[in-house]
Length: 173
Image 1: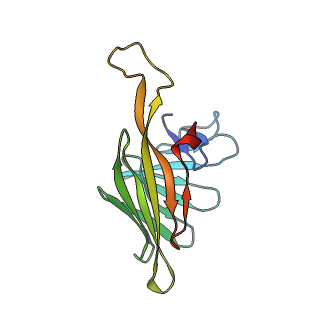
Image 2: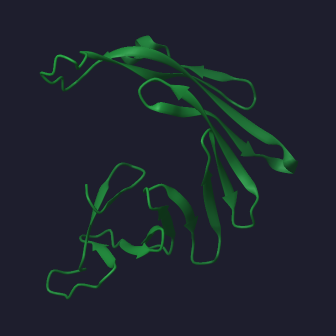
């Protein structure tokens, strides 16, 4: 959606070059209109979004979240690698590691998340996928386009205590 932020709940927040239509352009700063009051600032190597509660989210030039911080100096950073992501706190301690697995169509999905626990322990969560052929919702007239697509569907989650949840592929119908 151009210069917009899609929040975690899926809402789209479009940015405009001015806070109100009757004001002059503010240069490298953009604003949302309405009641969200978000401010987008262009920075070297990316962008930052300021939220009304004092939080700032920093994104790299490809649009990936690389840091979240508050007005008190607390922060979380995300370091992206080819097969895993590390989430670090402001003191550089690892708080979570996200391990990626290869899946059809998307290329990668979250295979496990290992959270830092108390007294140096770790809390691993493991995700299981099943590949399923799914009909395309907007099939075009190109004869090279298949009528179905192979997608990974989440079918299981194993919790740190060894218990698990199961979501059979049949539940997706």
